[in-house]
Length: 184
Image (cartoon, rainbow, N blue to C red; front, side):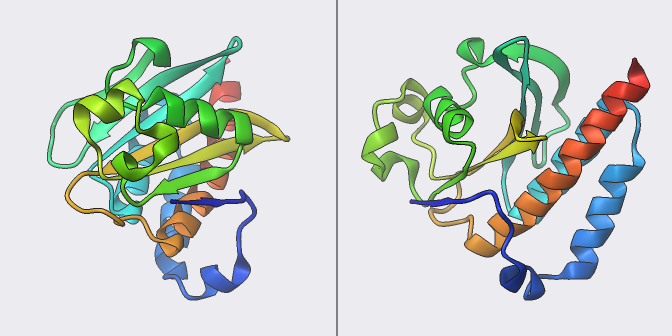
């Protein structure tokens, strides 16, 4: 388990494939239709993080709502669903609440081994391996988060992959706000 501050480390980013990150960032920033933006964002983040499944959770009206659920290899993509996290059985609500409270990224090498989350109903039922949850912060406020899982292996999410996700989340936060304003 490790927690990372939401500030991006420039040293780590130098070792990453900057061309790939820039291409992904541009793809995110180009989209102004909320549904398409969310679909593109989730596909890009899942691919760059090495996740099997990802969810976009957005803060709205004092609550947290799952707005997208995307899985690798599945044609089922649930976009713009606005399901309160309390009613979503496909993620760990205690991890989501932890990231919402701390506004820091969280990476778990093996979620079942972390005492703090071991009694979470989702963790008990599904026994997820690797989990990453990164906040979307806009003007110092939590606007949402990206929740990712890889259940093939423990330790799937490295610090380098977290740095990529944090860069993409920064771009996504701005793009989501712009898309919402355009939609209004």
